[in-house]
Length: 95
Image (cartoon, rainbow, N blue to C red; front, side):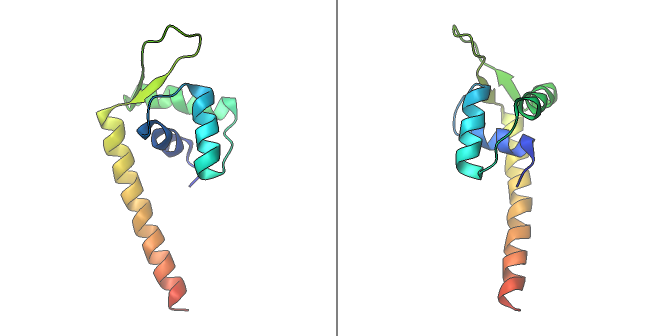
């Protein structure tokens, strides 16, 4: 799974984070390092879709939170990925 949008939504499903914290979290759970351009481009798209939104902060860094729509989208996409994984693993066992 290397889709930046799904990685960001998965990171935010664990709690609000600013960009750098998302980069660190994603690298820890997925082993994928998103560059700043990729990360912030995806954040902009996710915000435009209404799947994430900024939360107020007194700090320099802007934290984001996942919205209800973002949670529904993430759940749907992960269910599709899960199906592919189950089928793929099942086929490997039958080889």
